[in-house]
Structures are given as C-alpha cells and as structure tokens.
Image 1 (cartoon, rainbow, N blue to C red):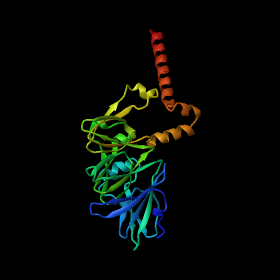
Image 2: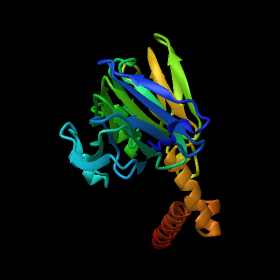
Image 3: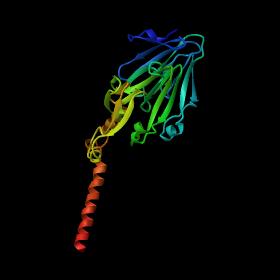
Image 4: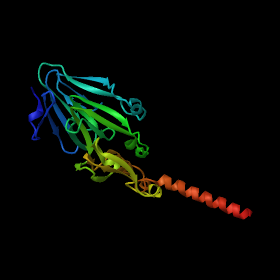
Length: 281
C-alpha cells in the first residue's frame, strides 16, 4: 500500500481504544497541521465537514446528521453546519485519511477516557474523532456566564470514551490546576477544559474601556481541579488583524472609528440642544 504514514520524520502515535483496538495516527506539519489516521478494513472516523484533505482509494465518505446534537437549531441559526462526515474504509486492505486544520493552529489529540469522559471546548474546536465520541453544542444556563460573544453563548461539549482531535490557534499551553487553584485566562484563549473546572466570567473595568479601545475586557476565572488548554492566537483575533490590514488606514489605525464618530455626533447634538434651550430661557 502506498501510504505515506511512515515516510515522514514525524513520530507516529498509536491509540488504544477501551476494546483494545489499535489505531495509528500521525500529526504532520508545523503551523497548519494535518492529522493522518490509518484505518483498517471496516474502521471509520467522524470528522468536521470540509476538513478532509486526502484519503486512500478504499475510503468512502458519507454525510450524516448527528442526532445527539441537542442545540442543532442554535448551531444552524449561527450559520454553522449541523452535519458531520464519516470516512469509512470499505476495502479489504488498510487505508488512510488526512484531516486538515481549517486555520493556523495545532491539532491536539485528547483521550476522553483520561479526562473523565467529557471536555468543554470553544466553538469549532472539534476536528475529528475515533471510536465513541459525541459532540454537543451546550448552552451555558448560568446567566453570569452569558456574554455578548459566541464563545460565551455556545460551547462544544465532547463526551465519550474515544479519541477526539481539537484545534488550538497558535501555540497551545496545558495547565494542570490543583484543587482550589485559581487561574485567570482571556476568555477567547481557552481551547478546552475539563468539566471539573468551575468557570466564572469577570468583566474588567467600566464600559468606557470598550468604547475607547480597551482589550481583554472579559476574562475567565478558572478554579481547579482540572486541566485547561490555552491558545496564544484565537482565530477571531487573527481574523480581526487581517481585516484591519485590508481596510482603509483610518479603520486600520482605529478599529472603533465608527463608534467614536457616533459618540462625537451625539455629543455635538447634546451641545446644540443645550444651547437652544439656554437661548430660549
């Protein structure tokens, strides 16, 4: 079989399922990675739509709707796909598939059996999975944790006893929190965390920081025990930098240009109205 699995200098890994089935996989590349998974006859993996980069001739691809997606309507309303793809080796020989990261980032293999069978992730963090893995879009029911961004409103919950691959932008750091240990993290920088961690959302400073160019307005206060994966370059931050670079110089230097213009006209209106009132008096 002309499989390039062992033809690269990257060290391959082997995942052993609870049923003692062995699945070799390999993470290739540096900044925009690919995970290559070997499939024996009859084996299959589930992946995010549009993530398949290449596959051997014996692998067939199907599109399915995940019935466990409890918040599928919310996912659809936010413009996201409500289906997954299944890559199934229907041949009589071993095959392989290459699943690519959709942006510049690292692919993290997470064995859910080690993390108590459940992980909470940022939206769109899930890439693909092997064996028993379910992906739910969980809505945080605690009002204090609902903020004006998709990261705070819609989160992915990955559960099961299989192996899940998630995406982290830039460099990824793993922090192990002991019981009662507290860690403050910029909210969009959280890739995934174990469900045993207590999360509190904290607003930093008054609203005027939002208007006059404040950053890091919202942080997540994490209290252990548990494990959290932190990314250095969230995708939305990268997209904002790209958007600023391709806009006009005024917008590039001041991304809140329109907000400040609106405030200027509002203050001018207040001054004019006040002058008219004082003149009438």
